[in-house]
Length: 468
Image 1 (cartoon, rainbow, N blue to C red):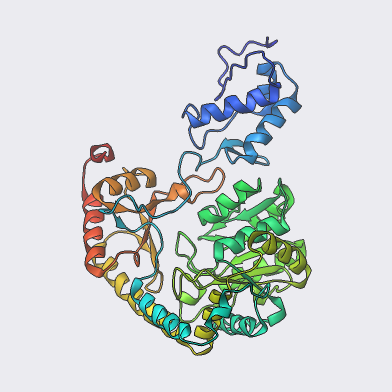
Image 2 (tube, rainbow, N blue to C red; image 1 turned 120 degrees about the vertical axis):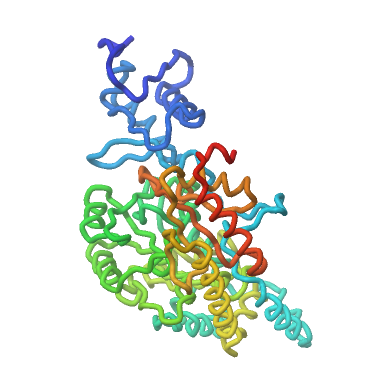
């Protein structure tokens, strides 16, 4: 029994641990997970200091530390030096952003899909390829990492962002998410920490969680990571790397300034950070700023893909890889993929070389711009972040809504959007906002119908519970 009385002592969590055969640290961890899962500990709750909890339970401090560490590795809690330990803000939400195929009535504004018009052009291109007498060779095992010709196509594609690289630095992966997972698996270990924006792409969150890698939110000012925040994370959180989306950040749509790109590059070189630069949105804008990789090529793994710009089913990504990381990345990709599809690699290379891919990108930009005009018209008067080249928008909500409650209201009304809670990292307090994928609807009329529903919800004076 505890030596001290805690009957009237204010503690956010007072677990009751029964004596049994289970090691005490596991019993504490299991009780903590249970209380979080059952909602007894709400997201964002600050847990008692470890010493205080050890005193309450009459156990060693190391026992509590082991229990907390186990829950931290599961993403249930997050610790910050000088701040304490909190229940993770996203612990109660689904961070896997998938289309609801079982709800045909639902208008999709959640998952980011490019418009489907270009798919027929890709299909026609494939049809011409199938008529070639040696087409069957593309279904043999391919060259690991692609052919030299395919890598040259990748260099040409990446060059459209203003970043000039070399073929020997190019590695191929089966899509952007596959590339991100390969970087985490190949260059990081369980227990490592990676800095991110306070809200970020859920794909990095799910991958990090699977590999027991902790994401640490970096201090921001005006939606950009600050030099002070990054240096603090290096010194106090001991981060090994940083994950960033510099162009049309997912979900906030923010584009990082040139000064911040240079600052991150300089800090990465000084502190020997591994930078994961997710540049899959960079070619959505006609005049992208130079990537971070241009200023720190030996520290940055630069990832671009074709799914958001050319066709969703074209699952191919290019990873520009520093020489120091090449062997580790080759092993990771080999163990995950063995090889990318020779057919996909050849299709992508041909479409890049003859500018078919570029023409599709131009058409997509025009379509996206038209969709954004519709969004601006229907949501005039509300704060909707994102310019006309972005294929998603960030909608700030009235105070009576949380992102999570608005997502649920919209779902019941027939529209899928994704709440800010899905994107938050660590103990970050979620914004009152939702992300809308404005190119996902099948046609402009469907987008207009969805926006009418969203505006109706925004204008309603009723409490959100009314809509449940």
